[in-house]
Amino acid sequence: TDNSPIKIRLIAPPIYVLSTMTLEKESGIALLQKAIDVILEKISAKGGKMDVKMAPKAVSLKEETELQAMMERLELENREVEGDEPDED
Image 1 (cartoon, rainbow, N blue to C red):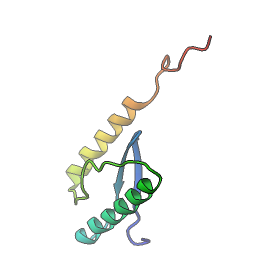
Image 2 (image 1 turned 180 degrees about the horizontal axis):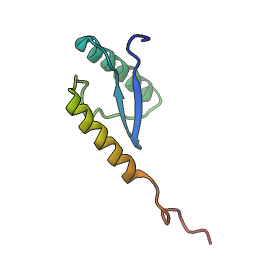
Image 3 (image 1 turned 30 degrees about the vertical axis):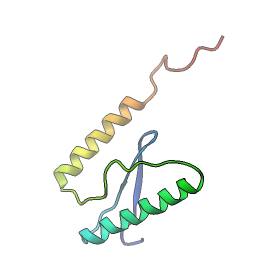
Image 4 (image 1 turned 180 degrees about the vertical axis):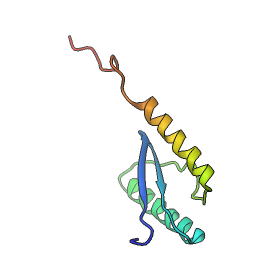
């Protein structure tokens, strides 16, 4: 919604994190769960599969900071480094 936009962040294919910021804890959790349900429905309709690793929950500033650090570490690990490309002969 306009009041609580959902951000979807790619961590490392196929890992994504959904987040929103709101003053209403329960409505934020419900909004994220609804988004997950819609995404699951769309992926399943195309014959795909989706596993939710962690249900939506409210997090503190400390947990948010730890999650951000973990996401940045995973992104860094996932970046291709020189030499990752297949050899062209």
